[in-house]
Length: 343
Image (cartoon, rainbow, N blue to C red; front, side, top):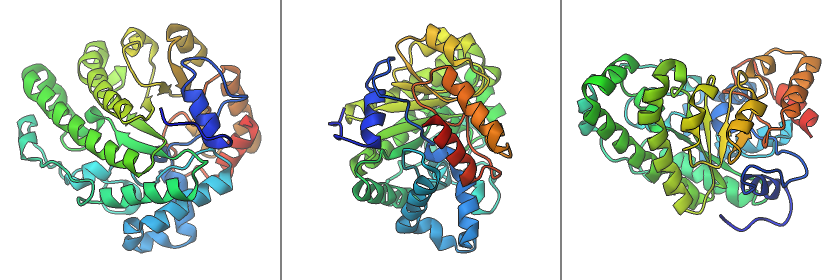
């Protein structure tokens, strides 16, 4: 781990992540990873007519200003990068972040799993929007050294479903198992190199987002074979860079608690349907993050958002955060209410 800062939000965040399942900070940090922020980011960008200017998404300085503004307006205790979840997918010609206009799901670049071999090794310094995000990470970490800057990486399995139809991929797990593993191994290497560039630029932690890896979609066996090992590959590599790791998984998790014991990330971010107390008892060595309902944050009254935040706090999360990605209806005011109640 990197040395802890003496005071401030980064200190609280890093002390929490180094606690190994315990509570060392005076209260849980309140964070919103960048991959959860796209909705509020759009709300703010619209106020400034930014979506009309496609150059905005290629301007690291403007993106960093947006991240700082969200931090200052809401009271959340980290900096994150809106619009950055699908930058690897976009560089490969796959899904793009819908907030930037155009079809979110263009024709998939891969029709069969074996076609992964035509994908090139991405260069984070040159390809797509990766250099913009890396530059933005550097600007944020240099401008605000006492605020944790969280980098976002899409897990290999979820990234794969942005490049090929999910049904085709699931069939390949049974019929072309070796090819499927080769595909996910390739995407893991891509994710590691991108993560390395973000850590070198100053990322405080890496947040691995894996919304496709749910028990409902995969079942226990596929989750064990095709999700956990590749999350761990990225985790191990990032740990080798001296950086902690958080991972988000959607849906119920108690059915795969044995498999989750094998996750090597410090912190697991969970959905609102998960009992934090129950999962904490099953995974005493892991930190848990969540699980303020994103649905209530979208359109809920102030008293409802405060009550939902208190409910989550009663379950003693190590980190307070939304349960999942935030939709367009979530306002900066909603996040400010959550943050102020948690504090």
